[in-house]
Every structure is written in structure tokens, then in C-alpha cells.
Amino acid sequence: MSVEGDSNTISSLERIAREQAIDQLRRRNGLMKTLGSENGEPKLDWVEGVARLLQEEHLLEEVETDAQAIHRRGVRHLIWTGMGGSVITVHVLCAMGFAAAGDLTLYPLDSTDPAALNHILETIARQKNLTPPFHDAATLHTLLEDVMMVGVSMGMTSEEPITHLTWFVELLQQAQLTPSEHIQVMTLPGSFLDQFAQQQEAPRRPLQPDGGTGTGGRMSAPTTRVFLLPVALYLTYTHSSSSLRSILADAWRHHKLDLAQESPDKHPFVQLAATLSDASQNGACRLLLEVTEEWKPLLIWIEQLMEESLGKGGKGIIVFDEQPLNPQGPCFATEGIVHVRMTADEKAETSPTFQLCLPYLATRTPEQRLSALAACFLGWQLTMSLYGYLQQITFAGQPAVENYKARARQLRSLSDPLEEIQNWKPTLRYEQLRLLTPAFIEPQETPAATFVHALRQKAYASPQELDYLDVTINGFLPENTWLSISAAAHKAGNMLLGIPAKVRQAPAAYHSTEQSEMDGPDTFVSLRILIRDHESVIAGAYTDAFLRAQAIGTWQAMLEQKRLCFLLIIDGSLQDASAPLEHFFEQTIQLLQPGE
Image 1 (cartoon, rainbow, N blue to C red):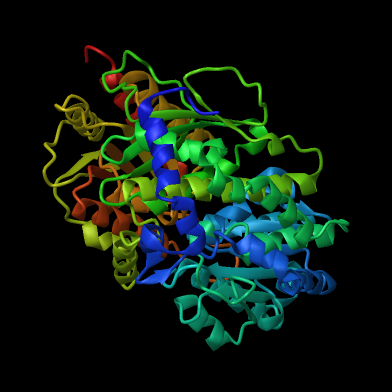
Image 2 (cartoon, one colour):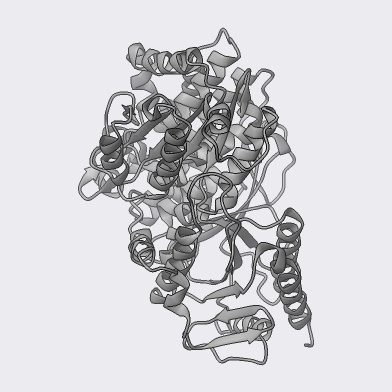
């Protein structure tokens, strides 16, 4: 149930009922149709998509047939390359225990760091007792003979899957394997990836089983092949007696969309939308979500859904995991923030936290978990669309990210994208660190001092302008360095400033939450980290040029949007990065201490 409350919440629920917002959503008319359309085309197929699939069983059977064909071909390793909504669902499934299905292992791939490719190759090689280098045809044949890559793009302009497929096809050719037997593409007609697939004569499948194009990437689950194919593969490789139909039927029953339409005040996800809307300030709200360990993987999916859909025109919902915020921090506030606990317990304790009670989360079998997961996807999509309706936010499309994509495309044409910022001013240097700042920032003695000075200016502005801290890491870092940075970011944000913190990994984050950072609420400071030199790929040809271009292009686009965004470059390799980064954050923490 929602927090007991105020008349505003009741008013929002009454408005949803009075204006028949959910009826508009289902019928695709009125304001809902306008807000759910991109370039005049409704992107609302996800609303009734499950019901349509249950009526047309042959569509689900076709996906299951594809999964069975992959199994018969002897595929044991499936690399799923995509960005944003094309792959986050697969990340969630893998993190929830569905990565290894019988003899099949799934590998989500959404990075342009060569280290990501190396990690996958090394994992496969270990299972075959192979060690790098992988240069001769015989070794590559053994390595790749049971490997398949599925390239996915639910948008028109994503190029990362093309770079991965190009690399993989060249390896297959070196291994004297037939590429068309080891790759498959799912994308929109006419997209960059579709053009590539046609050139390669790669097998193609429609994203929506019915061939439609009315589903945005972040709504890819549970009605597109982004969800359906991995689930069908799991059922096939584990010889489950369940089917896609049975899983979706249970999910649709849990979703209770008829209840939401007839009695909005009784539906948990409608209640949540009203609570978030009424807690918002000028259309912006921070959501801190607490979930059990079993359901934590869902957080990244919810984060993308909310931030990419709603982060527009200074409005939106910013999603964080639950964090302990220091009430004595200079930026601590109770306004514009909602704490949500997602639980299966209908008798959850009463507290200022919104209790999102979903009894179906109490599952016993993997198939029940898949149904519950699909129902969660549907419920959160309903909340998102209703918040967009209440705040009049166009929740289809993500126009802001096209700016950085175009910049990155141009930067990739340079021999080294870092040349673009070689003479940027102001730049603060300290040992191996270079901090590139917005032009209006007053440089201090060190990079850390300059960063803290900017934080303090935003924190102590009137009115206060700092609601969260973002640290974005481009590419891979050693786990201990990552954990150290994450701990420092949360200490700076949670304890010293009293605000939530995000630690994102790019370029994946640029396809999930960058829309919000560029065009949503601007009450944050972002620090982007880029190591100059990355490891080389251990097989084939793949460089870090795209990764560098993305890091620089997004930073430039943020500055153009007048966002307070810094780019911290470590001049060296991965091995050189840990000490200077740890020193930077140690100094940041020290300078943020009260009295400093």
C-alpha cells in the first residue's frame, strides 16, 4: 500500500480515474497516445502485447522453434550484443540465475572496451582448456565452433552491435567457419544494424513476434524477442515442461490491468505512480528503491525505464538503490524524494516508505520467477506511463542521446579521439591526472580541489541545486578499484552531502540513463572517468577508439546542455590507474569534510 496520506495523492488517483488515463493507454487515444508516440508513431504495443501473444499462439511457438534450432545446432555459448533496452533484460535474466541453462551460457555484451571481449573469450577458452593467443585457424575453430552471437538494436542508430558483429565475423572467417551459421540479428527495418545484416546476409528476426515496430527499447520485456528468446532458450536447454505461453499467461494474470482500469486506487503500480507524482517538485522526483537480494538485478531495468522515458525538459524520475542519507548533510531534503520497498509481504510494517506489495514475488520455481519478473516489467511500465501522463512528459523516444551519438560517430573518424580535447581549457593536471572542466568553472590548486569547489558551489546555492552525485566509469576497472571508487562516491554523497550517489559503467550507461542526465533534472554533478590506454583484444581486431569517442562525445554533449560535468583522464594504462584514482577520491573526501 502507499503511504497514507495527503489529499494530493488522492487527487492524483482521482485524476487518473476521472480522465480515464488507463483507458486512454489501452485504446491508444487522447493525451496518452500523444505522450506515447515518437515522430507521430505510437510506441504503445507493449501495453497489450502479452494479451495479443496469448491470442496468437503461433507467434510464441515461432520463438520456441528458433530456440530449439539453436539447441540442435549445438550452440553452447551465446553472446548477446546490444545496448540499453536491447540487452539490459538479458543482464537481469543472467543476474537472476538464468545465464547458465543446461549446456548453454549467455554472455551479455554492451561495452566497447576490448577488455569486455577478452573476458568473454577467456571464459569460453577456459572451458575448453585453451589459452591465448588465439591466432591460428585450428585454435580459433575449436574456440568458436559452438559459439553464436545475436546482435540486437531496438533503435535506428546504435552502432556498438555492428562493431561487435564485425569483429566476430572476421574471427569466424579466420576460423574457417560459416558466419551465417553463427550470427543472428534482431532490429528495426532500415536501422544501421539492419543495413549491416543485409550486407552480411545474416539471418534476421523481427523484434516483435508479430513484426510490429511499436515498442520502444526500454519496453523490450516481456513482449519482444529480447525477453522471449532468452527465456525460450532457458526452457529448451533445461528441458522444462513450461512454455512461453504458460509463463506469459501467469504474468498477465499477476498484472491485473483490468483492475487498474476499473479501480485505479486498488492497483499497487497505479498507487505508486500517484505517490511519485505528488512527491515530485516541478515534475522531478528521486526514487530510492529497496528490494530483496533475489530481486536486486531488476533495479538496472527500472532505472533505464524511468530515466530514459521520463528524463525530459527538466522533469523525470531518478532511480537509486536505497541508500543511508545523512540528515545533517548540507543537501539533505525530504521533499522530492520517495523511498519504495518492493516486497511480497502483504503485512509489511507501516513506515514512511511506500510499500509496493507484490505477492507474486514469493516464488518457488524458476518458471514462477520468470512469470513474476515479466509481471514486474509490466507493472513498472504502467507506473512510468502514468507518471508521464500526470506530469505531461512525452515518454516515447530519447532525443537527447542522438546528440552524443552523432558526436561519437564523428570522433571515431580521427586517428585518436583524444586529439579533440588535447588543448581544452581549463584543464587541471596533477601527476597522471587531467581534469577537464566546464569553461565557467574557477580552477583550484588540484583536480580534486576544483571538483570539490564545484560541488560546494552547487550544494550551498540558494535555492540548493544538488540532489545527487554521478560518477561514470568509461570501460573496465579492476574490481578492487571499482569498489574503492564506489565506496568513496557514496561516502561523499550519502554521508558528507546527504544525497544519493550513482556509480555508472559506460558506455552501457549512455544508452540507459544518459537521456535523463542530459535533459532531465539538472540538480547533480557528474564526474566522467577515462583511462587513456586500454588492453588489446586477444583475438581479432578491435580497438578502444569507439570507447574514447563515446567518453568524449557524451562529455561534450553534456557541456552543450549546460550540465555540470567533468572529464577525468588518467594518462596511462589500467595498471597505472588505481593509485591516482584512489588519491583523487581520498583528497575529495578530505576536502568535503565539515570545516575544510
